[in-house]
Amino acid sequence: MNPRSTTVREYLTGLREEGVKSLADRLQSFRAAGDLPPGSDSLALARLLVTLVQGLAVQAASGVPRETLHAVADQMMMCWPRRAGRC
Picture 1 (tube, rainbow, N blue to C red):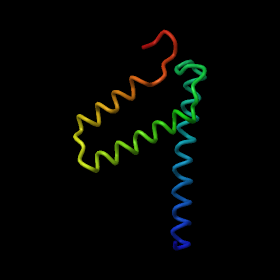
Picture 2 (cartoon, helix red, strand yellow; picture 1 turned 180 degrees about the vertical axis):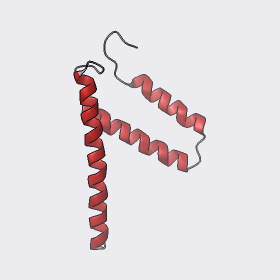
Picture 3 (spheres, one colour; picture 1 turned 45 degrees about the vertical axis):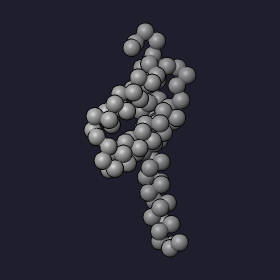
């Protein structure tokens, strides 16, 4: 592999990880405010969201209908952790 490709790959990986970390920090603030259950794993939730968005992007690029992508997102939100007393 070209050494310059490795550098680009490492740079892009770093950008992705920064995005995940930033999202995890935001989710942590939601948890601290009581908008997510106390036992929520902010980093795991951030990775879950990033994985979902990336998967939806791949499916959209492959021609999956918008309605189907919305149904997937809706199903994911049904699984999203909620604080007690909220639906």
